[in-house]
Image (cartoon, rainbow, N blue to C red; front, side):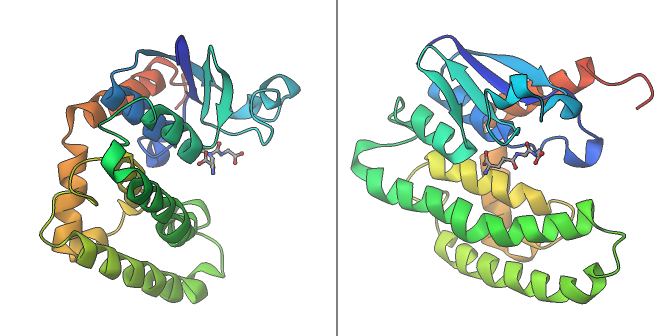
Length: 217
Ligand SMILES: N[C@@H](CCC(=O)N[C@@H](CS)C(=O)NCC(=O)O)C(=O)O
């Protein structure tokens, strides 16, 4: 994989800054030591034919490289991880993949559901009715995940691509105290976010927003 470019939003309001899924891709590239450039797409340009040529659903992230175009943050992180013994260790291949799917298929749906209620639809009448059940669903998942993390630093014996996905998933509920209610989980997220590669990825994403901030924002 060479001549890599990552597509993210040109700018997004502060409530979503640091959450957009190109962060996972940037983090994986930083951990893998692969150089990349940033490309920025306006939200109003997402559904244009030109951009849909890159992403059929008009979303970010997209990764462009000499190998072609890739979509889906999990698939992109997996492709990057295949180039990195740190992210996808040969002796932990299957279990790393299982935890990558766990982050995206078992944890992200419930966490994202709560994020959409609290942040994207917060003024809608149905939210107060549905929210308590959504919180319960999140807590059930977080409790099980926290049990898995008790006594260990990462999901597996060492840091892998699964931790990138899990941490970025858990960030979707950073506006709540739910993660903080589970000490092993809270420590885990802080540990992962303290990694220099995460900090570099976040800095790159935030610098883009700062550079592209609309005049009236
Ligand atoms: N499953 C996709 C989800 C991508 C996604 O939801 N991207 C959001 C930003 S984090 C987006 O582009 N939203 C714009 C839209 O839905 O129109 C992935 O993981 O890449």
